[in-house]
Length: 324
Image 1 (cartoon, helix red, strand yellow):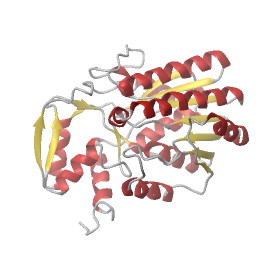
Image 2 (cartoon, helix red, strand yellow):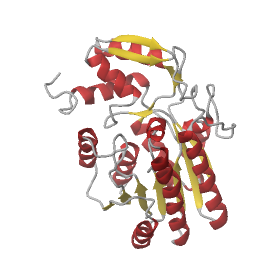
Image 3 (cartoon, one colour):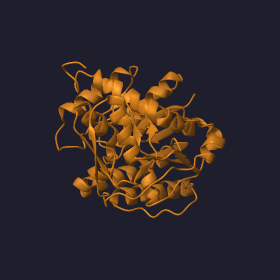
Image 4 (tube, rainbow, N blue to C red):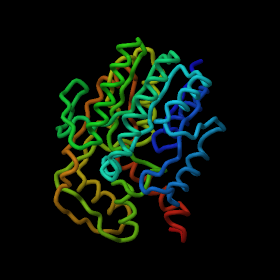
């Protein structure tokens, strides 16, 4: 049986990956320093989400350390001896990178090199890197893994640079690599400052749902589907040394998503403003490679996924302390 080490194992994507691995009976440890990327000190929301995520996980070892601390990471990997590292730890999106680029670069670049150097030293068999659809830049529906990447903004640029680093370490060492490009992952236990949560909370409070660009689209991917794809990529022999789009592969305009939310909640109004120029225009990703090699089959459509997240929010004592 393989032993898995998940960096960012208590984050939004990381905790669900760990849960799926535990459900398979795998041995899994995490590295997570419990940093809140939304302020310089932990917030009440981030602590609430951490507590709720931990409730879903079986007892496990977590190493609370910054991944850029090469000396400590080296000791941890040397002690744990994982055969697979799933590298989820990162600044989670462009907004947080823009707020503090030097800090983001320390995590996303120095931290990644720290993990790769340690993987090299201890003979880790496979390194799974969670990248982003933002590496493509502007794209239309059905963009595939071998299509050209033209990232816009420092988040996408650093994610693409991370892919190159992973592949180069694999070239040097013979270590297997897998690169995952998810898109617009959402669901229960996500923060309130992302588009799906924003829409649902605004509608629930009968406020305006702000749509940045009438024609802008996203390939919304439910957290359970994303985690299933990542686990398949980490565990399937044939997955090695390739890149996979892991998404629903169905684009929805932000306007459609906002109108669907208003209809679902029964409150709220849609407010259309200009496109946010910090973000590229995107569509649906092609997932044929993941379907064929990983057996990836995303099951949760947008309507069901939004409903699940809405039900979680309205039943949360944090977001809805007075009840529905």
